[in-house]
Amino acid sequence: MALSQIDEAKRALAQRMRSARVAAHRDRGRTAATEICAQFQRARDAGLAFDRGAVISAYWPMRDELDTRKILIGLHEEGMQCALPVMQQKDKPLIFRQWQPGDILEEASFGVAEPIADQPVLIPEIMVIPLLAVDREGNRLGYGGGYYDRTLLQRRQGREGPVIAVGVAYEAQIVPVVPHDESDARLDWLVTEQGFAQFMPA
Image (cartoon, rainbow, N blue to C red):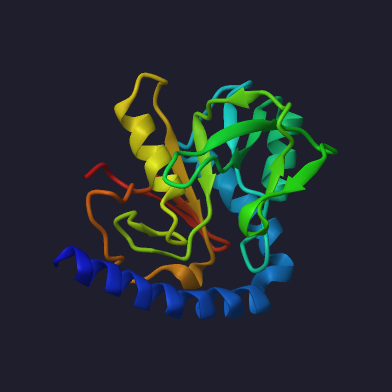
Protein backbone atom coordinates (compact mmCIF):
# COMPACT_ATOMS: atom_id res chain seq x y z
CA MET A 1 0.00 0.00 0.00
CA ALA A 2 1.49 3.37 -1.06
CA LEU A 3 2.08 6.03 1.58
CA SER A 4 -0.81 8.20 0.43
CA GLN A 5 -3.09 5.17 0.49
CA ILE A 6 -1.98 4.32 4.03
CA ASP A 7 -2.61 7.89 5.17
CA GLU A 8 -6.06 7.88 3.60
CA ALA A 9 -6.87 4.51 5.17
CA LYS A 10 -5.73 5.82 8.57
CA ARG A 11 -7.93 8.90 8.25
CA ALA A 12 -10.98 6.83 7.32
CA LEU A 13 -10.40 4.41 10.21
CA ALA A 14 -9.80 7.26 12.67
CA GLN A 15 -13.08 8.88 11.75
CA ARG A 16 -14.96 5.63 12.30
CA MET A 17 -13.18 4.78 15.54
CA ARG A 18 -13.74 8.16 17.13
CA SER A 19 -17.46 7.40 16.95
CA ALA A 20 -16.88 3.87 18.23
CA ARG A 21 -14.93 5.14 21.23
CA VAL A 22 -17.59 7.73 22.05
CA ALA A 23 -20.20 4.96 22.05
CA ALA A 24 -18.04 2.65 24.18
CA HIS A 25 -17.39 5.44 26.66
CA ARG A 26 -21.11 6.20 26.87
CA ASP A 27 -21.95 2.54 27.47
CA ARG A 28 -19.00 1.42 29.63
CA GLY A 29 -17.28 4.55 30.89
CA ARG A 30 -18.92 4.55 34.32
CA THR A 31 -17.34 1.23 35.33
CA ALA A 32 -14.41 1.05 32.90
CA ALA A 33 -11.88 2.82 35.17
CA THR A 34 -12.30 0.09 37.79
CA GLU A 35 -12.38 -2.69 35.21
CA ILE A 36 -9.24 -1.49 33.42
CA CYS A 37 -7.40 -1.29 36.73
CA ALA A 38 -8.29 -4.92 37.47
CA GLN A 39 -7.25 -6.06 33.99
CA PHE A 40 -3.96 -4.16 34.28
CA GLN A 41 -3.24 -6.09 37.48
CA ARG A 42 -4.10 -9.36 35.73
CA ALA A 43 -1.65 -8.46 32.95
CA ARG A 44 1.03 -7.83 35.58
CA ASP A 45 0.37 -11.25 37.09
CA ALA A 46 0.66 -12.77 33.60
CA GLY A 47 4.05 -11.26 32.78
CA LEU A 48 3.85 -7.47 32.53
CA ALA A 49 6.34 -7.30 35.37
CA PHE A 50 8.30 -4.42 36.85
CA ASP A 51 10.15 -3.81 40.09
CA ARG A 52 9.20 -1.51 42.93
CA GLY A 53 10.46 1.96 42.10
CA ALA A 54 10.06 1.49 38.34
CA VAL A 55 9.24 4.58 36.28
CA ILE A 56 5.81 4.24 34.65
CA SER A 57 4.06 6.84 32.54
CA ALA A 58 0.36 7.04 31.75
CA TYR A 59 -1.88 9.72 30.32
CA TRP A 60 -4.30 12.07 32.04
CA PRO A 61 -7.66 11.24 30.40
CA MET A 62 -9.71 13.77 28.47
CA ARG A 63 -13.12 13.55 26.84
CA ASP A 64 -13.91 9.91 25.96
CA GLU A 65 -10.48 8.41 26.67
CA LEU A 66 -10.47 5.46 29.01
CA ASP A 67 -9.65 6.72 32.51
CA THR A 68 -6.23 5.55 33.77
CA ARG A 69 -6.08 7.63 36.96
CA LYS A 70 -6.86 4.66 39.23
CA ILE A 71 -3.91 2.83 37.68
CA LEU A 72 -1.64 5.81 38.32
CA ILE A 73 -2.77 6.22 41.92
CA GLY A 74 -2.40 2.49 42.62
CA LEU A 75 1.11 2.41 41.15
CA HIS A 76 2.11 5.45 43.19
CA GLU A 77 0.84 3.80 46.36
CA GLU A 78 2.94 0.72 45.54
CA GLY A 79 6.09 2.83 45.39
CA MET A 80 6.42 3.29 41.63
CA GLN A 81 7.62 6.56 40.11
CA CYS A 82 4.77 7.88 37.99
CA ALA A 83 5.00 10.34 35.12
CA LEU A 84 2.78 12.07 32.57
CA PRO A 85 3.72 12.92 28.98
CA VAL A 86 4.64 16.45 27.96
CA MET A 87 4.56 17.59 24.35
CA GLN A 88 7.54 19.54 23.13
CA GLN A 89 7.72 21.12 19.71
CA LYS A 90 5.88 19.57 16.78
CA ASP A 91 7.78 16.61 15.30
CA LYS A 92 9.69 16.10 18.57
CA PRO A 93 9.32 13.08 20.86
CA LEU A 94 7.54 13.37 24.18
CA ILE A 95 9.26 13.94 27.48
CA PHE A 96 7.83 12.71 30.77
CA ARG A 97 7.59 14.68 34.00
CA GLN A 98 7.03 13.25 37.45
CA TRP A 99 3.46 13.09 38.77
CA GLN A 100 2.13 12.44 42.27
CA PRO A 101 -1.46 12.61 43.56
CA GLY A 102 -2.41 16.19 44.32
CA ASP A 103 0.07 17.73 41.87
CA ILE A 104 -1.08 20.80 39.96
CA LEU A 105 -1.45 20.20 36.23
CA GLU A 106 -1.56 22.82 33.50
CA GLU A 107 -3.53 22.71 30.26
CA ALA A 108 -1.34 22.42 27.18
CA SER A 109 -2.05 22.00 23.46
CA PHE A 110 -5.24 20.15 22.50
CA GLY A 111 -6.48 20.42 26.10
CA VAL A 112 -3.95 17.89 27.42
CA ALA A 113 -3.18 18.16 31.16
CA GLU A 114 0.56 18.17 31.85
CA PRO A 115 2.78 18.52 34.94
CA ILE A 116 4.21 21.97 35.48
CA ALA A 117 7.67 22.72 34.08
CA ASP A 118 9.60 22.44 37.34
CA GLN A 119 8.68 18.77 37.82
CA PRO A 120 11.64 16.42 37.19
CA VAL A 121 11.96 14.67 33.83
CA LEU A 122 11.82 10.87 34.13
CA ILE A 123 12.55 8.09 31.63
CA PRO A 124 9.70 5.55 31.69
CA GLU A 125 10.29 1.83 31.59
CA ILE A 126 6.57 1.28 30.96
CA MET A 127 4.39 3.61 28.88
CA VAL A 128 0.60 3.35 29.19
CA ILE A 129 -0.69 4.81 25.94
CA PRO A 130 -4.11 5.95 24.62
CA LEU A 131 -5.30 5.09 21.12
CA LEU A 132 -8.17 5.18 18.66
CA ALA A 133 -7.80 1.65 17.26
CA VAL A 134 -5.59 -1.41 17.63
CA ASP A 135 -5.38 -4.77 15.87
CA ARG A 136 -4.44 -8.24 17.12
CA GLU A 137 -0.83 -7.73 15.98
CA GLY A 138 -0.31 -4.69 18.20
CA ASN A 139 -0.52 -2.07 15.47
CA ARG A 140 -1.91 1.11 16.98
CA LEU A 141 -3.78 4.02 15.43
CA GLY A 142 -3.23 7.22 17.39
CA TYR A 143 -4.46 10.75 16.90
CA GLY A 144 -2.28 11.67 13.92
CA GLY A 145 0.42 13.72 15.63
CA GLY A 146 2.89 10.84 15.84
CA TYR A 147 4.15 11.82 19.30
CA TYR A 148 4.06 8.35 20.82
CA ASP A 149 5.39 6.71 17.65
CA ARG A 150 8.40 9.05 17.56
CA THR A 151 9.00 8.56 21.26
CA LEU A 152 8.85 4.77 21.15
CA LEU A 153 10.96 4.45 18.01
CA GLN A 154 13.62 6.73 19.49
CA ARG A 155 13.66 4.79 22.75
CA ARG A 156 13.88 1.44 20.99
CA GLN A 157 16.84 2.64 18.93
CA GLY A 158 18.61 4.47 21.77
CA ARG A 159 20.63 3.85 24.89
CA GLU A 160 18.11 4.77 27.58
CA GLY A 161 17.17 1.17 28.24
CA PRO A 162 14.21 -0.93 27.13
CA VAL A 163 10.66 0.37 27.16
CA ILE A 164 7.37 -1.54 27.16
CA ALA A 165 4.39 0.05 25.39
CA VAL A 166 1.00 -0.82 26.87
CA GLY A 167 -2.04 0.31 24.92
CA VAL A 168 -5.22 0.98 26.89
CA ALA A 169 -8.55 0.87 25.08
CA TYR A 170 -12.13 -0.27 25.13
CA GLU A 171 -12.70 -3.70 23.64
CA ALA A 172 -14.76 -1.96 20.94
CA GLN A 173 -11.60 -0.27 19.66
CA ILE A 174 -10.05 -3.55 18.47
CA VAL A 175 -10.23 -3.89 14.68
CA PRO A 176 -9.07 -6.59 12.22
CA VAL A 177 -6.29 -4.47 10.64
CA VAL A 178 -4.73 -1.10 11.43
CA PRO A 179 -2.96 0.46 8.40
CA HIS A 180 0.68 1.08 9.28
CA ASP A 181 4.15 1.76 7.93
CA GLU A 182 7.72 2.00 9.24
CA SER A 183 6.96 5.25 11.11
CA ASP A 184 4.42 3.48 13.34
CA ALA A 185 5.51 1.83 16.60
CA ARG A 186 3.82 -1.40 17.64
CA LEU A 187 2.52 -2.05 21.13
CA ASP A 188 3.91 -4.75 23.40
CA TRP A 189 0.70 -5.20 25.41
CA LEU A 190 -2.96 -4.25 25.19
CA VAL A 191 -5.28 -3.90 28.19
CA THR A 192 -9.02 -3.42 27.77
CA GLU A 193 -11.91 -3.37 30.21
CA GLN A 194 -12.52 -7.04 29.32
CA GLY A 195 -9.03 -8.54 29.11
CA PHE A 196 -5.44 -8.18 28.01
CA ALA A 197 -3.02 -9.47 25.39
CA GLN A 198 0.73 -9.59 24.90
CA PHE A 199 2.00 -9.15 21.36
CA MET A 200 4.93 -11.08 20.00
CA PRO A 201 7.85 -9.12 18.47
CA ALA A 202 7.54 -8.54 14.71
